[in-house]
Length: 606
Image (cartoon, rainbow, N blue to C red; front, side, top):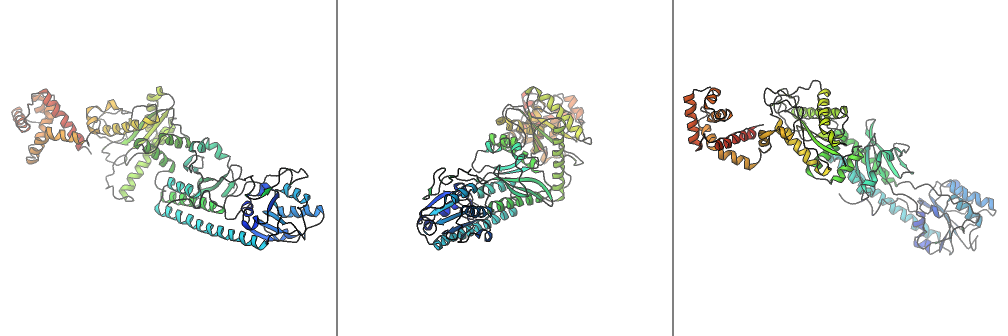
């Protein structure tokens, strides 16, 4: 789906006075702007020819009035009242053809009154058929209205497609910015930015001090334009519950230069009385922009209803940013900017990646894989697992708040919740991690602690990566924390926080279990013995080798541990030595075999 609705910014439905004065039928009349230059960008809704002084009562606003002046009042007071009446009903401008009533120019009192009211007053110094002007302007209006209808249809179609596709908020905002050519921001009710697209402008300038800036944008109505700030705003929500605002900055404003080919009186010439030249208020954004922001808001609200049972949008943004840091899919400056828009400062902070996940075999399924099949998305097993992960993410967030810590936090995958702690003082790292672990356990009194008596006991594993001083290195800390958490799942110890030095050789092998070179090493060292056990399952020589190595090559202790007599155990060792063609009295050989056994355990671990 490409392109904006129109070339440049969204065009108006109606031409402006400036554009009408540039039309050929008007230019043939040698137009000269006498007063009201500041109103040249008013839209012209229609052209009306009038020769009576009380025409204002028949007008509805937005008309360009054409007259020869033959029916206008002869006295100054009457002319002032005539201009005031036109301005009062919102006429776009007044064009007076010279030659019948006024020979060389309109009365100075008329020009002064028009100047005071900011009403464009134009003289036509050559005779011009008014019908040519009305035809040209009305054709322009009809063409613009047809373009508006087409653009509106494209808006509806574009956002209907996005709704059907279940587009993410970022995509909806991107499309809104692309269609309008204007910056678009989605915020929650706390004025935190959920998504944005600067439409080619400087994003940092756009979002700088956003919360304070946003709170000054206070339009009236559910969808309204705030002329002081230049933002078009609509509420986002459904079923009577609003949860955010969608804002579009419209670069509206008035141009003070004269139209091409139109003579403009110099300063003071059109206002001989020296009256103050009032500046009219900013123009109203085009109707299609209002339609666009409302359709975009509806698409966002529908998407939220569809995803009602998934993680909140703020948490989704956290997840997007955490993923971007690990996968390097977004520039770190953009990650920092988006985090800052949420009220979270990541640059110039000491950053520590933390991962919280259940241990490997939680029999209750409270914090771990469910005993039910995972199933397809939406099945009972998948929904239960997603619900437990969502609860864990909420618990982690609550613990962060209780410990007075700040950071990104969200689910990282189907089992783990990630946190990127942002600390002002690197020396506070250990203290912050200890406070977080304690708060996590306080946040859920029913949370079962790890059971050190057996590997993979219930409860949670909390792992932390190495602290880093740059956001560019934050991904490394997060990846390290994830790997440590994975390796610590089957650790027998009850540690409040697992760090890289805690995982040891077994943990390292666990991290490398998917590495083909490690698997090749295991097959080279133990493949023959594994093949023998596969053909003779009742002998289980691998268990005999494990007992021998775990007892430090003490044959008597190993025989006792294997519940075998020493002669039987010795005979098994001799058989293993022949199968592997290995000297089991060699320290180096046994070390290699022991590492291979640990690697095999890591590869086979769930």
